[in-house]
Length: 185
Image 1 (cartoon, rainbow, N blue to C red):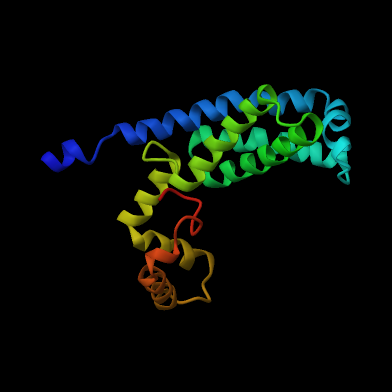
Image 2: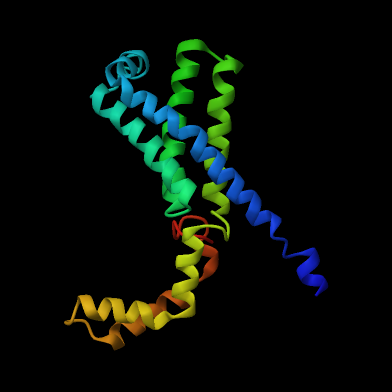
């Protein structure tokens, strides 16, 4: 009982939920602003970096901010969404440094989004996420995976699938962190 009081606090997972939802909710409007005037965004932010295909990259930046934000908010494919946001924030930080130097007023918001996305990639989404629910479903019923694969592919035997699952479970966990799965850790 003392173990659950001192070591298994729900507040850690609640903190992950707050970081995910606030980061996604506050960042999503930046993606929609880019979509409102994609040519203006390309002229102001992509072309000064002399990157090829500025309109395409502008749509990619807007899509990663919108899509990544939704993935963070829902907690579904959370690490994938955070990786998309991290990539966009990396380019945005580079742009800010190249065009304006180390101007803290330009960098502070970008750095906060970068830190949030980086933390979510390393720590995972927490138990208040769709990733956690999916993981729990597959952990509680490993035969569900076998039935899904055997229904889709009749040529593969269920024994082969069982062997592959047991091989996967026997792998060393030390090699898995942090990028073995984009689902909850």
